[in-house]
Image 1 (cartoon, rainbow, N blue to C red):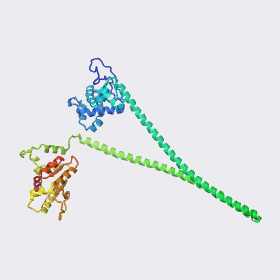
Image 2 (image 1 turned 90 degrees about the vertical axis):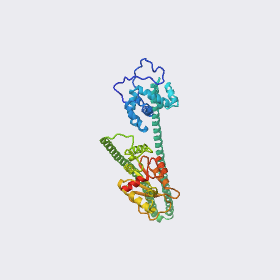
Image 3 (image 1 turned 60 degrees about the vertical axis):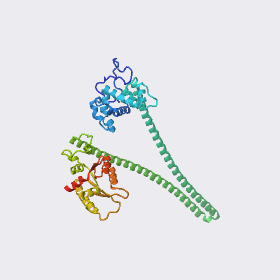
Image 4 (image 1 turned 30 degrees about the vertical axis):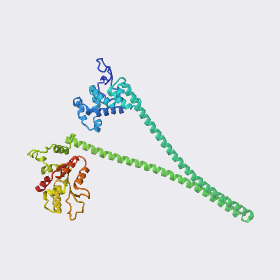
Length: 466
């Protein structure tokens, strides 16, 4: 198919190829329509263009593609394919700029395509894509050869599928043959049993004949007994035939029931798939409608990115004037700003805060006072709060933690600083994590992992204000 949807004007001229002698001459160039591209070739052309698009200077990127150039790599070729294809067809200068970068990345293969040749081992789709962009002599023949190769691969896949189906049918036939062989063995066994019974009857008949010859008086009785035994044998054979017919009928009924069950299961699964598809389609359309109703445009940065940028721009030794007060690491307003972020997590270096704020108390009283204050913050903000204390020994008499507050003690051989760093590393990237500690090493360590370090005074002043 063509690279883009067909236009009303099919008189676009073929552009001079990059690196082809005579491309810049003033001689008129014959007007030819765009070739019909196989779908894999068209997709490869869009992928190559999307890969090198961000590397072009901003003034060389056409206006319709400037927004596409800012997309993520995995979305650029998928969402911007129509715009990229239309620009390649309509803007020869843009195609030449793209071609120069694509050929540079292609290396030897790009040089071979520019010369109008293609290595035998090269991917025909890749060769056709490069030929379309570079447009050397014979580029249309290269594209036609690629289309034939793609169709040959599709035919090979169809042949392989037919072979696989034939093998499956052969396997099923072999299975049916094995089942028939088992049934025949059963019938032979049944026939042998009937023959054995018939032999016994014949032996009895010979005995009756000897008895008949010995006594004429018992001739009638022997004859009647022989007729009786023969009737019994006939009935036994008839019963065996009837039982065999009933078994075959039951087998046919079982096969029919199995077919009906498979059809019912397939129909039920189709209904479930239809319901699930309809539910997902409804949810997707509702989300699209809500986004359109709210007029939301894609954003490049999240709220946490703006907070992180503001914190990184803070001057190290500047005085805390009216404009920088909110950026002071010991200012409770800064703490309130961070805790107002969605799904924020407050991690507190317990003894670092308590010994700085109320070190005259016992350790038990320090812990109790800090945990109680943190419970109020958790209740007001709804954020997750974790307080970490040093101490490998078992702590006795610790009151229950308030709702929303997690109390952790470092294990033996581990400090509270190491436990805090492990908590920060366990959080997903992008989540606001606020670490309160006046320890410089703790602050530097958690900052490298994307957390926001604040001094202990910010929390103490926040607790005093509550």
